[in-house]
Image (cartoon, rainbow, N blue to C red; front, side, top):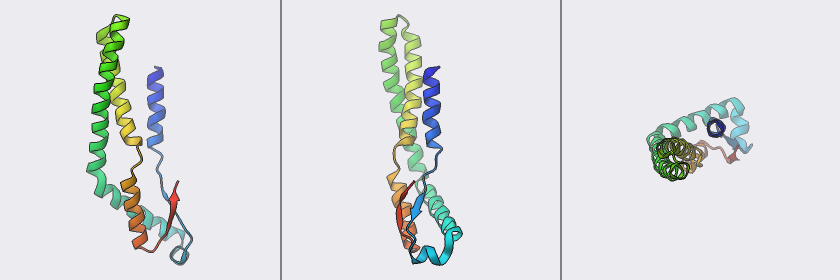
Length: 130
């Protein structure tokens, strides 16, 4: 149960959307915050569309690797506790979830660079991301 709660906590961090913060240069001042927000949304959507398959593969790969490592650790744990099957299943499940979440939590620098470049081409200056 404790592992499940930890997994839910980790997954909640993945739902927090990071967004670029813009420098108030002439472009931002001339178009205003609403237009700038729409431009940011467009750039983010383009980046996600362009990079979608890559991200999905990365998460699946992390989950697969996590499952294999978790299953192996669970089997070893099961040998010591006398219930190898249960340890194998539990370790595999926890490893897959952890591997998938770790893949999703890793910073997606390519996406950020894509969005930064997209916004720069529109005349904005990105200070950073929140």
